[in-house]
Image 1 (spheres, rainbow, N blue to C red):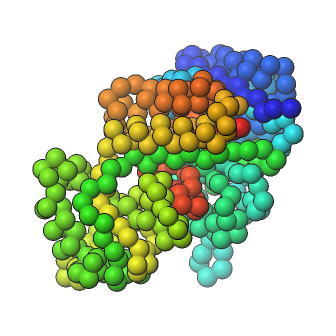
Image 2: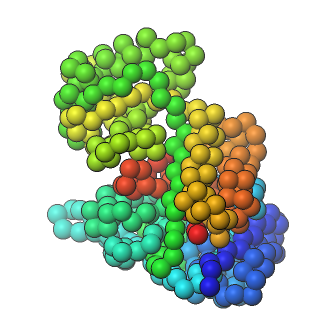
Length: 386
């Protein structure tokens, strides 16, 4: 039996009625099949009493498993609700596949460190979705650990971008609401294709890291890194200098990719520079011999990247319409980046031939680049279900 997905989005001011409408619309999309897994994304008034949404969605869909979180806005039904009260519900019947939900928590460890409990073993999984709280969960460290333990398994998701009215996290897992950690789901025996659009345009020449380690680059092309980058910026055309001035980004070609393409370049911000040493710090580990290039945020590139990535997923599916998708887009995208409403939602709707999709505006987006899973910014990541 094929995977089936149903989605619903509602903006009713009453949390119960909004959850009821969104859940019923999602149930209709399942065409009489049970909901094996449900994802719920809450914004605005729903965060005053998230238990209302949890109870209502549970009563309507009676899911085998449920995850969800609060967001600054939600995505669904080809629309983006960036402000106000809204709920988006995504429900799937997995055919012969299965889903296992989890809640991961952080606890004090030895020598003043922390340990993460509750994370499942994802080696051998078809993929996983992760929804962490930004204040209580070490997302980058966990993704690094998952990469070592389960190489090649795609992990997608988004960092919760809104909390309850009393300031706590609203992480939903089955019939419970957690105030910290992360929730997620492991998928087995289905096909989940990852799609990542980082939305940055390359400017200037490629430069080799000739000295550097950890997060610090000492030399680029045999010269001190900070002065070299300044020279590159000064040599750019005026319109490119203006774009870079809004935020200097570095595209890092991942050294474990034999023939890297645009999707194998990890975009990271510069964390700072040391004029005395001539070094720069970047938001990812680097090694000597890696190639880097300056990048700038660009709406046109973000639009093209997302459309191209979605088209490649359709090709990978032999042109078939997917069952559906989960969408995690940055709070810095939307109308602020594109100047029009519903950009990413409409792009996903068009690129996946109308397949039902839902998600939320995240405070950080999770998705694979070059075979590794990373936490991104200003990115749209999409989990496409065959």
